[in-house]
Length: 359
Length: 129
Image 1 (tube, each protein chain N blue to C red):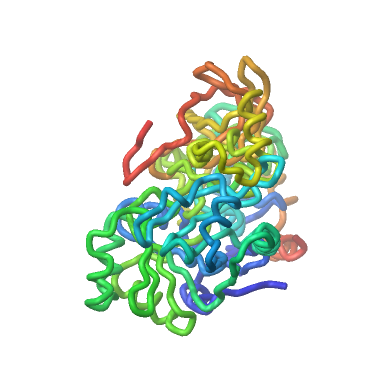
Image 2 (cartoon, each protein chain N blue to C red):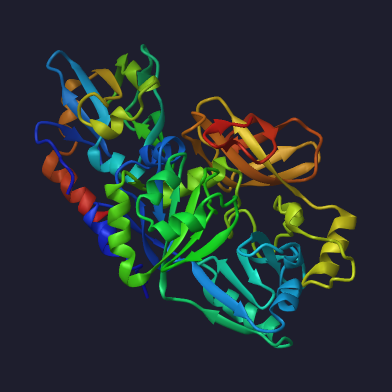
């Protein structure tokens, strides 16, 4: 079965090349994914992310439930609308999915989880919920549009009512607010400023068109992937999955160990993994011709690893990658590319932020 | 359906060949091929003076999506390469049959080109893909 977002007709109208993305027919590009990439780095671009799953978590034990469910700790959230990125782990310490949780109050939260893992996630959320007084409700009533880039906020604001402008005025990164009919969040997947906006389904096509009229460039999944990789952000299913520890996926910063008595899902397995040591997710940089590709074999002194995501970086003009390799103090690695071994530089897995190289 | 000029010859591996009338033949990849590959980021070309045999992999067209070998459609010697592709590989996307050409071969046997597909034959070969 192929799912279509409510913006599907707008993509066809714009001449998008459509592809199957885990059961959703989505735009890969509208012509040139490199031009779309640059639009986000230099001006403003937008993505249809309506395929992502929105789940509301409500009830007297909502906070306790999420403190069990997530490796990051929602107890850190006190401000209304504050968001948190977290992995959701299984008992073996593997990543069931990564998600964003918005905190409204201790009985009311909203999750945004991946579309590719929707069914598995819903089963998992409901399974863990059995021991808590909490309701788990999928919200299919919204389309979601990510508007990203240095001019994204200004251009999107042209569509906001006075009340919505007031609601987002001075809003810091990683917050979300319901303002009249829109849920507006300062989140994203590109390393640029901007909004992710939840729009009621029946308003979505018109909202999308008004963003085009405001000078925002439609961008497809191709640009979304090169942008997130430059920003050093993981893609579920590629950079981590149920068999991979968050410690081996550059997600150690999302694990809240204290207080030690908080017994979140996967904690015991994670403590063992931490004591034994795990592979690490690193960045790779190759300034020579050629493109590092997902799945290529990587060698360092301590052993072998693999490129989990590799691409050409349009912003930097050369190839970058994320690779899961044994913990090493090496500064370079060997990558097997088209039957040759090529030496590349090992860096932290973050390459571009706010339009500029961080290498 | 993408553009397939009738005056060119084609290899089933998506190269086009243009007879320059002086014993040399210009080679590029077809519009259909560039559409499949997407935005081009590097093009690795042979060197002028290289002797190439029909079917040899002599160039690499690398896009955001994949690296793809380009094969010499005929036997001969490389007499020119498109140096503009070094800095503007996107010419292969914007003008596959023109400014996006890759290299020029001086044919050992100019009649060899007649064994390649004509436009209709190439179109049929794409439809079978």
